[in-house]
Image (tube, rainbow, N blue to C red; front, side, top):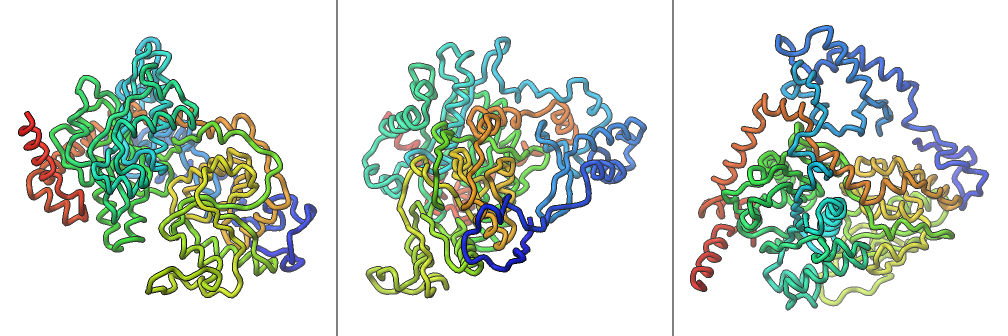
Length: 616
């Protein structure tokens, strides 16, 4: 998309329908190219060096350098689909029908031998990674381990819960009334931690009360009463002891109570939601995820490198990236990244796939919508500075700001509100040190934004346009929910939004001028009704199917990984993590790496054992 202005000059107001017949009318597209899909296909065939780097190691007589090799390269080229990149150059990428990220890496060491390429069952998943139930094989036992829990309405609490529920729903036909899915979640041992994360009412709550709260929400809000009822074969819920790291606003496990508490005979398939986060400070016991479970799938939720780069030291980002990569290598057989925003952890193991869905209540479209809004946590990291710049551009072109509602709350709410409305609009907070937090506070003209407080997104049906300027997200759930409710969604062209390109009401901009054009189009047009096929893509049923597909390891890939020794090297990393983490030196290392209140893992384990001995 381009950014040229209309020949009639800047608009003085909202245009009529005739001036914009499509979201990109009057624009010179930045991604238009004379290169067709056929040209791209031909280019890939002719670029033999690139193709050979996908599959061969040069000067190795055991690998492909034969007429069969050429046909293999031709097949690989035909498996590529062309798409316009954000830079305006047509690129080729693997089609999403077979998410074998490891098959498409350009690193020579991950190339296939001729024997591996000719495996007659090479595209089939290994027995360990075939997660689909059937009458012949029955169903698998799943453990979904995550770093957060309701009532904290964060993505790493809600999405793992819904994943567990839908895996249970998938297994129900074959489980004969027996629970086959366990959700493993943190129990914050400190009342202060519970109050800080969950609210004042949770200081004296028990595990049983939290269990009941989760099941009630799953039955009533998510519409999954059977999966919420353990007596009907629904999910089991298991807690592990945890503490809050206030500086990182994150929850971390204490001790080695997760792995060790899972019976070996039931340890089949494990989903580690945020595998790096779960293992950074954990005291590694002799039970390792990848050795205890038949198949371990990591789900990458959070861009921790970017988080550390923004909130802590710039030099800390590479360290976090390296440690995160080691944790994935040590404990995961496969890693699913929710979007391409995330770092590279282990190229031979990872695949990019959106494996999240949305609750069914969002799939009911509401006609006659109007108004613009944003919903989310009120942090500058959510793109509010960019949103203010977009408001400024809109005023520059039209003579006025656009009205909108900002829904949500957060620790930076007051300074964001001041940035929109100016210091003179709001009362000064009590106490001293009332210094401006941003240059936007000195604005002369207030932006007409209403800060409406916290609200469930399902209650925002009457809005027509959802605007989200953030580029720090990995995959924004509220964007998917807005699309499902039949709204226009205006978001930046960014890897975190790639999944949403396929929806006609998702309007992506590459510049501020382009944003103005798209917003004016959305104000004067109605969103297209979603087709049943597009609606299905947003459901948890479709997300679960994508998850099973992405979690699989082909027999060809498994043979290659075994040949190049990756399985052994990953085992050595896990062993190294165990050796470094044990004893007093482990606590010292964790403290040095910023563990804070979760550093003393070994001391915690020792104290726990001594208390247990005294009681017995």
